[in-house]
Length: 241
Image 1: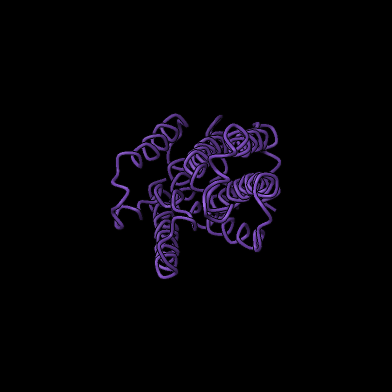
Image 2: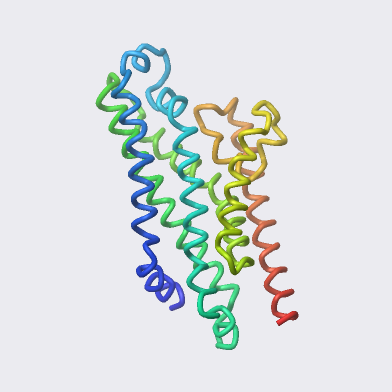
């Protein structure tokens, strides 16, 4: 029931148009990039999806993380305006369920954006490259991998958003985390597990199947730790209220 109520709240905020618009912008990037210099991509002796991801994934991931930051800010801003959060704590509503419902909405919206972006990649592969065997299987695997690696930063952003009454604090923290990735060494495997670095890893850039498994295991561990951290925060907030 609360999930449906959260959806109704967000209809008034511009959340869904923002995510859709951002997804369309990210989807347009590989199309425009490939259309501007098709010979440069077609001549490479690699599968079409690998070529497209190597050329466009950095920008697409950066846009997706920006969407996650904006979405997290908007989702909790409505709760803190007019002290709605304090009023809700006096009602028979689980604050923890509220958090997870909001996080689920953000993740579903970002999955929709990823789906649009992968449809654009499919268009590029079919239009500019010779017939590719196994293209749609590779796209599906890449979609699942990209979404899995996007979950940890989204949960962390939602934790920021649930803690900060002022959404500008969440926005600033998110921007700092995103740009921290740009100063981290790209060849350090340990630093690659920084939550906001994870989405920049792609199947095309994975060294082997074992490393993919390790990355996914690290991603799962970060999700569990983030969920436990939020549970502790909720208990502390309840005792301090």
